[in-house]
Length: 385
Image (tube, rainbow, N blue to C red; front, top):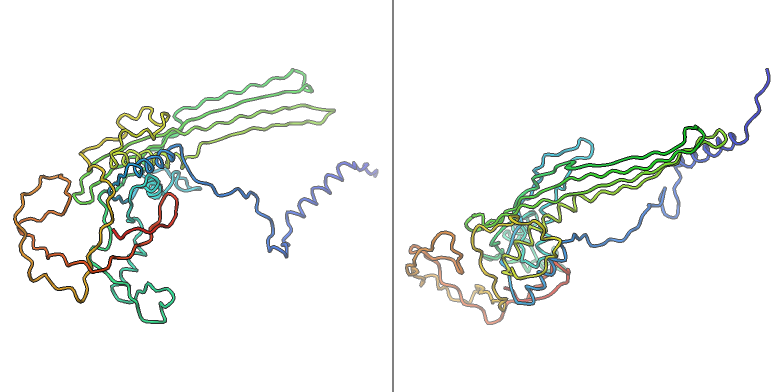
């Protein structure tokens, strides 16, 4: 029985494959780093902006330059209502649209109060009411007090709140593509091919601005954005001396769907902020973002005009020495009842209102509180208003 000659190239290929498999199966880690493998990548963290983000920050700067102040907003639930679910990858669109809106409102410079996550606030209010919460970090837990006081009206309220949902996700609105292959009839002659494809989908949101006091819907917004994807591929096939070679490559790109949702939220927030500031003459929105937006935003009733920023007010604080004037409070004089939907500059005191007279303010002013600018994250100190 004669032995077949051994092909040296085949032996080398087997040895190379064995070496690769040995490296893949290794379970040894680097003692210096404690890692089996170094992570790839290393791109820096960058701002997550959309084409509408500069318009929001421009609006905030314009309002600040004119001394305009918008009423406080809150953000409710902006849910995924598309119903699109993949058994392997989960929901097709972002579940964090409410957070997109919070960021957009902050970028627009509109005052914002937290209503989405109240867990920490509720716990701290419970602890403060039980007189076990201290604001002296160096002494907390070791020395009794100073306790955090609780006052009536200490939580800032919202004048309007934004809610809505992601309501549409439509696949393959349009698709197109083509392939071309060229080669001689002879099997050993090279063959080449090139092809490409393109498809378009869209996503839409519906938002509404609600009066926090009357629960009246005062404005609505509905916007859609198309998302595009494309792919290009090319290849060469040839036979050299009995060896077949098939070389192919390509490139594909898909516009980020979730970034498109963020852009839609920012578009709606921009309209709301313009209305609340009264900056309809602003040129912050680029021309490319104003195409076919008729009916995208509609105001259902007149909103309060933006107020000029006034000096912070000094709050009245009850002290042990302050006289109790509640016994001397009288019934407020009768006032004409306002028409429904009227924006009140002060709480309405009806004929049956029996509000106690305000207590006098102490001699000293309330110390300035630290505040964080939501656009720059810089800490500033301002009055307690």
